[in-house]
Image (tube, rainbow, N blue to C red; front, side, top):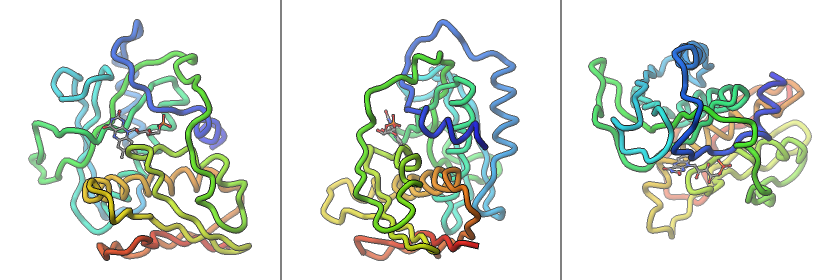
Length: 237
Ligand SMILES: Cc1cc2nc3c(=O)[nH]c(=O)nc-3n(C[C@H](O)[C@H](O)[C@H](O)COP(=O)(O)O)c2cc1C
């Protein structure tokens, strides 16, 4: 847990095209074992993956590419974000650089088991210095109310186009997490898809930041045209 908390502030998207340190078979075995132990938000949503060499994909960085597939059930994008952000952070702690990669597609869109392509992550062996960066560009006005200390770490969550769609309202015993939708944006449909993944990523980072015990409720997925959609509520237990 402490390892993941440190990774929250260490991580950044790694976009390297070359490395003197290739990922070894042991690294790949570690990645597969880690994936098998990821905690889902919803145990009944089937998720699968393929690990491909970058040359087999349309990604322009990373040595390997993890293609993520899922059953298309309610909140499946939230589930993918929540699960695979755990992988991002664990790999960061082991200096395996990751970048979520929403651009483009994949050759094998549907696996033989029927699970459909969702998103990719690039994978690249790193050194500690690869994680050094200038102060990340994050908006700190997105958390209203109490428990602002939690935001210090979870505001660093990655998001598509750094769009930071999370909005939080909190009092002493309740934290409400919503997704902001820019209805004006010309890319809003695409961004809405990725922002659902972003929100799962954010919930993962938020829960790692929490020291106290909170009980989580996830709201049903909605495609209502509203600026703010409530995603989850945490109650102090
Ligand atoms: C769902 C999702 C999709 C993303 N897609 C891409 C992408 O296609 N290409 C890319 O270079 N970065 C992509 N990113 C990385 C974001 O640009 C990055 O997380 C954001 O700019 C914040 O920077 P940081 O991760 O270094 O903190 C994606 C991130 C997320 C969460």
